[in-house]
Amino acid sequence: MQFLGVLACAAVAADGDQAVQVYGAKRGAPPGHEAFMALLGEKGRPMDPMVSSLAAMAESISKQEPGAREESVKSIKTLLTGLLDSITSQHTIAQNSVTNLTAFTTCNVNKAADLAHAGTVKKVSNWTDTSAAYNACIAELEAYNSSYTSCAAQEKMLDVAATARCEYFEAVDRTENFQSWFCHEDDYPATASYESYLQRNIDMLADFRLRRSNCSNATSAHGVKQTECGGKKGLLDAKEVACAALTPSDKPVDCSSYQATKQACVSYSNCWSQAGSESSSAVSTADQLADSLKAQWKALKRIECLLDVILTSSQATALQQCVDQVHDASSLDIAPPAAPAQEVCTAGAAPAGCAA
Image (cartoon, rainbow, N blue to C red):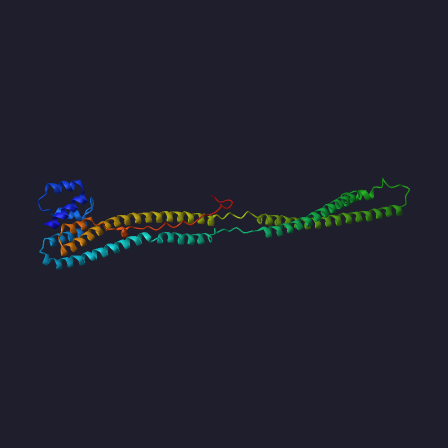
């Protein structure tokens, strides 16, 4: 009964003024199970079922005869040791979950891979640099133009010559009325001899034939040159078309690598933010678990102390020491590591023609 009385006092210490009032209302009467639970629990926090069971067992043992307690206490201590070890293991797991920074490392690894890939991204393009071919074509075009210009000048001179020679021939051409031209003698002196008249006609015919030959030859030469220049003009026109097709164009701007680099940095930033959120959530969860584990650990340490008292003595002083003893549970605190520094990721200045 003395043991339970001390437990009731502990209940007063744990629950404050309200407990004092409860104890005062029952002063002189044996304290019950609620007082024992109050000793081992944390105010405002429900007791862990396993701790509650051990407390109930300890309460039951305290009511046994001193000689029958040893075996029971030994069994409970075995369970208690297992629970303390379990609490330590749970804390280790919670601490490891907080210490695990692989999410950040994964972000860095993925960023490096994405940036490496971005450097190889190229836009498929049919663009070809035609500068060299165009320059060569222009050189040929200039040669063709020079040849045609020279030919055209010669053709013009031959045309002038043919026109002059044919006009000279037309001045004596009487092919349409040659009989009257030769038979009428209005322009020949009547006193002239027949021989001189005949010689005149012979000379006129020779001059006619010479002028006609010169006109025909000049016309033929002009026609040959005209055909030659037509061929050169055709080559010149064809070369102009060919050179126009080779006119160089500006190389299309390829923004694909820049855009891929920008996206890699955006993905990296999102990944880092997600890793930070997960880390903060892990710390919060671990802290909540640690609070629960510390409450259980303190309760178990009180039970351990009370069990020792049960075996040796039930003196109020010894029991009060168990109640008053402060159990440092700081070893169960969660120690979150410093968050790693986010690496710099930038796409740099946008290439000319690319949207920033």
